[in-house]
Amino acid sequence: MSGIKLSNATLTATENQSLWHPVQARETVTMTWFSDIALGMLDSTTLAPLCPLVTLPILPALPLGPAPTSSSTRATSSWDPCVPAPVYVPANQSMSQLISSGPEDPRLFFDNTGLTFHSLPSGTVKGQSCLNLTAGRMYRVKIDRAALKPLLGGEGHCPVLGGSELAVPPVVAVELKYRQSVRRSPEKNWIRFFHSRLGEHFIYSLYPYEVVRAQPDGDAETHYRGGNPRIAQTVLDRKVVFHGGANALLVEPWNLRTCGNKTGGLCDRNNGTGKRLRWSRSAYYLASFHTIDREGRYRNYVFEFASGPPFEVLRVSRALPLLQSPVFDRSLATPITFQSGMTFLANGNLAVSYGSSNADARVLIMGQETLESFFDDPAPQ
Picture 1 (tube, rainbow, N blue to C red):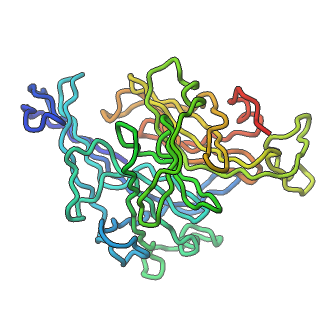
Picture 2 (cartoon, rainbow, N blue to C red):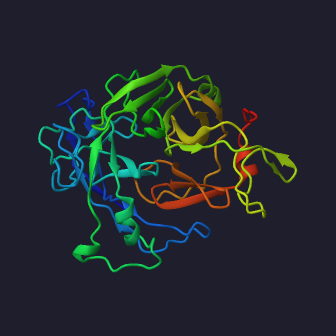
Picture 3 (cartoon, helix red, strand yellow):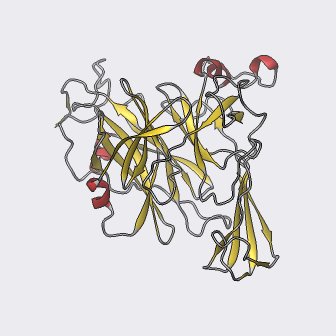
């Protein structure tokens, strides 16, 4: 949910020329996002919610000392993002100030159960400052899946929340920090994946390509840095910036199977025989990213990358046909779509979740042949 507060006050933006333009602004537009992260469980066939969503209380970790292990260890009492200075927008000679009330753009992961999100840092942590901050920061939280399951309807009924025994357990957010990047601006949509031998990794940047390995305290170190010709070729004819999307899914190898008249690919996992069927090729990761052009238009893609170092990109799809909702407020100049989640359903279809124009939450479901049709290159064997 979002709200917008407008101020018609005239400001002379000369106090900080690294952020403001030294001319007189016509107005100040202050956009306040009222955001929380809510969790729920969906029926794997109909995608209908099993029970009402529950809000996940998130606490910021203190910046010093070891990484917290529970909600009561080295954490403040609430998430209260600090307020950045206004930024001058030459296009309409106005001052723009974004105030976020909490975490944004959550992305679940299931290998260790948790989520990543980005937000402005919590102002309740002493020493934090939003001055000169050009983008939100990335955070990671771990979730006790067993504790949450009965609260989300995972035991066949919807509980009555509110009592101490049915309270949603708070989690502590650990900031992800990568100080060695070659990007000019920080990436706020890190793509997470987990390697069984090497641990937790993130694709920090797609172009240039930077893969980092994360430590428990949130510090990240360079694992691989190099070119990414397949990403570059995808949008060679347009001036865009690259950002991440959904966390990666590991697609594991199975024996070669024949699905109807096609060999290989993602089949119906039961296929009427009771046998589980999956991809016929070597293991790889499936993830997504989006681009933004000079007019503020978003395009979303899925891509595949190798399951082992240096985790090179294997294939990139064409842009996905995501539905754009109308723009209802001044938070956007043009309709957009932003993909933030992916999962395989019980029948083998891929479910892609995305937000549309800061107004709607949508899901695109694709079968094997539909997904494959978005790739121009054949699948590697």
